[in-house]
Amino acid sequence: MTNPDQITVTRTIDAPIERVFAMLADPDQHHVFDGSRSVRASETHTVLTEVGDVFRMRMHRDDLGDYESENVVTSYERDVAISWAPGQVGKDPLGHSYAYRLEADGPDRTAVTLTYDWSAVTHPKIRPMLPMVSREELEQSLKLLAEALLAF
Image 1 (cartoon, rainbow, N blue to C red):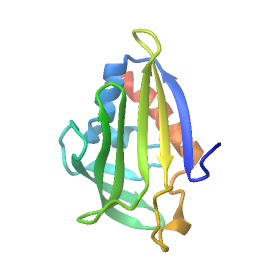
Image 2: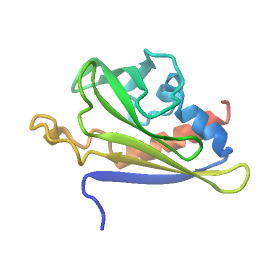
Image 3: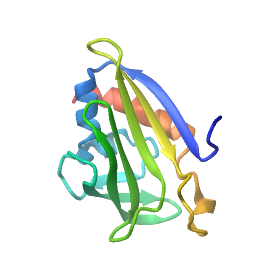
Image 4: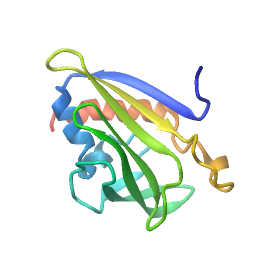
């Protein structure tokens, strides 16, 4: 059964799994493959290495203007999976998350599954704004990730 509070997209990328994971674990690279075009830049400049790592991003959305998000890494399994939950700076995450799952498809190709999940959001002012990204924007993220890995 499909979760109505999730969007999942998958794409096979012509890059080894280690390179794909390295890009995902580097917040300085996130603006390069953001299909929603809301990520502007990393404020943290550190590579993610474990669950609980926190990184800040400068963001922009037409409906919200410029803002900063604070993201907490919620899963980390090197070359397999990484996810994070965004929120306001200094506050707990809002309950939505971005999760990447990787599977090798030979030595130089990786199947990447990206899931945006907002099922844990309960805030009455935030719920009506969700989902904050569309299926098309998530698909664009994987397309941009594939293109960025050609030069990474």
